[in-house]
Amino acid sequence: MLYATLKTLHLLSIVIWIGGMFFAHFFLRPATAGLDAPVRLRLLHGVMKRFLGAITYLSLLALFTGLWMMGNVAKTVVQAGGEFSSPPDWTIMGVLGTLMVLIFGHIRFALFGRFNKAVLTEDWSAAGTAMDKLRQWTFVNLCIGLATILVTLLT
Image (cartoon, rainbow, N blue to C red):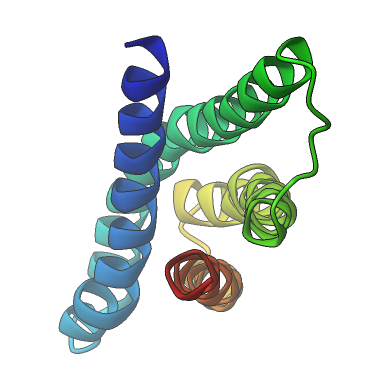
């Protein structure tokens, strides 16, 4: 029961995280392109602040539930007298998931920090530059997340 609960939390965290990045990149950002810079950047600031706040917790939840599930399976196999060897897709998931959390940390604490400061001081040029970096790194994380899903489903 605990394993099923953790797996559900793990998957929901990932669905919300990757779905949010996909929505922001392919729907929200293009829809705001015609707005004046102050309006567009304030809107994106509000959205990103809420999204990144939620993903701070969800990314850590995904990481820790994934590690717990892998550890639990390894422990069960060893306790039963077997020898545990992590399946390749689990290893790939673990490595790419950890990479995504690290990139997210950079997005959340470094890039969003610059964007936040620029919006609060109404430096729209700096805010636009910072938002572009946020977009680029979010796209990188989105691609890694989608690749992780494909590896998991195809192996």
